[in-house]
Length: 340
Image (cartoon, rainbow, N blue to C red; front, top):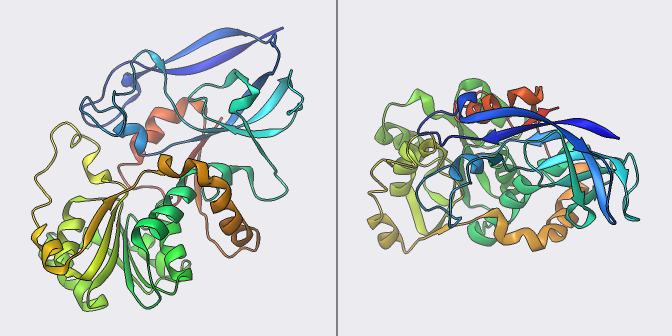
């Protein structure tokens, strides 16, 4: 027995925006015979994340080398088991895996994680109960260390990670300002996530006027969770309070072109000296071994409907490159997924 497998092969490094020309969609016949402990899976949902663009930089990032050309684009998926030669999995089981942009894969059972669809929607394994949830929880609690009554500012607050950071900070008793692009997103942050304040950064032309509005609303910043960088960070650093904590989770404003020729900055590090503040980068991979810990805390909130986890789902495997590029235009809200 065999089936047709589709794959997106990463062919060319993008210097600015990502287009389908940087990839090639190929089809091939996949032999479905299974060795011992092998499992055949069909990918149903594909995670689309900013880190994928970081991996395409020609300059050093958190990996020692860039994502190799001429192989399947890496990424996480939620899939269903089509056939199994492992006692751990049966046909029809839902699983998560890191098998990338391909419709089907034969893998060793050891790389699969079973998902219980009765506990939460299967897509949460790519969102609030997956890598974004891990990033938000440990980035905030381990690096940000928020206390009740403090002011936490989150950039990219309507995104997959930022929207969770904001909600986790509220659960710690903090006062939270979310920064996002567009009034619709800001209304969502105030009305649905119940944040104390929300600011549309697109309404400001420079860091000084944006900073003045943040100062007017908050009085000062204790924790800044940075997903964006650029002008927003320039606006916030002068506003930090004594012993503030700045968490660098992402710099999405720099990813489409800035990875190769970054903007100048930050130019305001003297404020960290004045306020004896800390600035720390965090990566989700550093907390992979603590996924069970995060899920024990967050999953009951999800099951009780106490956490908002919005999803934007794009239909069609052929849409993956365009979906990745759309991350940098800010059109979506919450977690971005592609459904096969």
